[in-house]
Length: 426
Image (tube, rainbow, N blue to C red; front, side, top):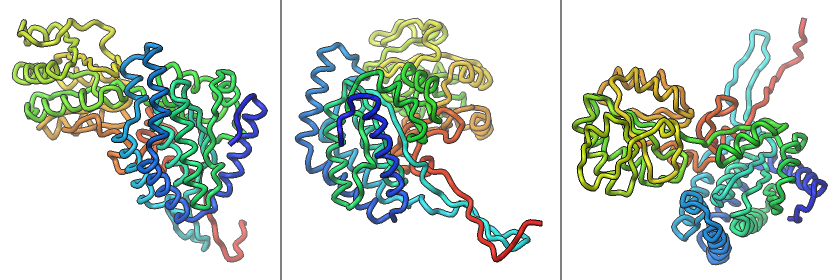
């Protein structure tokens, strides 16, 4: 894979990816699945060079003062590499979407009509910090018959180059043109501007990172963009909630991995549930090191109990994606008030309700406008792997052309196939 030095070499990379995508689109599932199994085996068996490269990135990022959330996203270790390998195997085990007949029928004039899934072509992605994204996107685009053009952040360059080398080698060993995986190894910002104008070579662009990156790409790209990933996630504890379940769910949603977009940010509690439930939730979260930004009603319920890590909430706490061991807590008087708060401050990512009331559950499902609505479970389940997709290219908070985790089917389009026997239109 040639080094990208300027706009001309970037265009050449795009052309190469486009040619490789056309070859890949014609392949059956077998070679693609073998390539993915090769990738999984390499992730498990060739960890030394990847961890060494990641160690250089991590050390430099730490020395530069990178915050804890970004450092956590950057880190690779044997457990995470093995997890990535498991995700790749899961993708290999999924049905191949290409050629799937979405619907079919016969018209009154005898024409047989089908809609069949086809690849989009070339998927571009610009992303920050997380080297696991390199594997996720490459695996999903390969299985869905698409080539990819990837551009990771400066902070993860060594890690990404090690992973790209592994990917291209494993794919080539399966008899597939490794040019289906392209990586822009130059961190010059001007090349990003050029990439955003390459609509003749890139069919869809998916940015992953903070609001600044996502908004910049969405505002400046010439090709279609699926943007999202900024997650301001609420969990509402209804007056009929099981308090033990609520406490466990909230703890998991906040603490299991606080630096990702589907982690809990704000807890809303019905005023009838708060006296019995909030002290347990606050104790659990404080013991786990979570700083709690509480409204005045929550503070009055909790009182001056020693060891609780509480602060008064401000207006800035509502609608904030923390990506850290921090959560906001607010007491509300009704489901209506909770829904209004979510409508005002939510980002359209993931919203959850904990309730024993079927009507409240159904209304929450109906009225909340988000990519994922969860009942009596953790917000951490909004994830491609957890939802049976193997992995995800990203999580879309848009409504076109896909919403939520972007898996194999979300990386396809379709074509009409019309078969006749001499029919003409009158």
